[in-house]
Picture 1 (cartoon, one colour):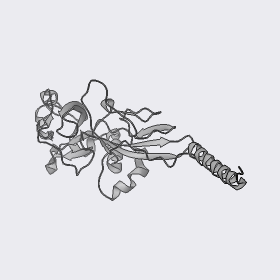
Picture 2 (spheres, rainbow, N blue to C red):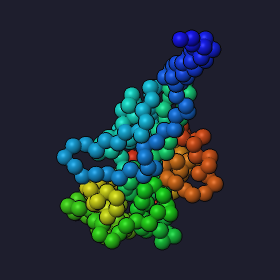
Picture 3 (tube, helix red, strand yellow):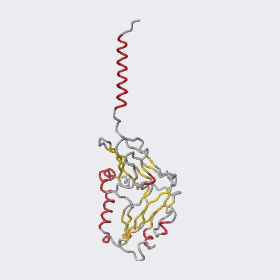
Picture 4 (cartoon, rainbow, N blue to C red):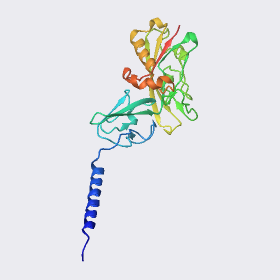
Length: 267
């Protein structure tokens, strides 16, 4: 039986093309890396072991984070949520072996308190918690609990157990800064709380630092400098305004968001 040589030629060409196509697919470099953790907000979980969240896709290279407070594996990008500071917004950056950088913004759900001066002369005597690093997010107070174990209140830090508001004037009356308040007294308080949200009331905690000064003129240089940097940059919160667009270019100016600084100016 005679076989048409053209058929063999065509089959050879097709087979060769298929081999090259497969080989190209197997050896071609991956496309652009879209760094993601599946959601922009990660909730703490109560479980026996540490709660770990990994990138949806791993790539070779190095993972870094800003600001400080996020426990991350620099090789795999895995976040140990249980050992990280919650209530903050983080920028995670992946640097590929060829130097290409890709970033993603992630919020660890929880509360923080704004770094700000509270002027009692202007009736500014309350510090309000900020939820999920955004001034526009509504705190889920129904079913939530603040100061579990009564640690803060028993130490004089007057905090509402239903909504987390700190009554700074009552803190002063409670003698947090001494029977006669003295300049530059700094007190740290740990506030244990549970939120009725995606965390399913997992136990959470934040440390807050309260400062006391009679007047703005009494505020020392180190506090002025730290407060200036934190307030100007505002990179730890999603502000929802024009400043947000420029925040990424200024991230390197501030690196330590904890503890939040609540500064009382009595007069």
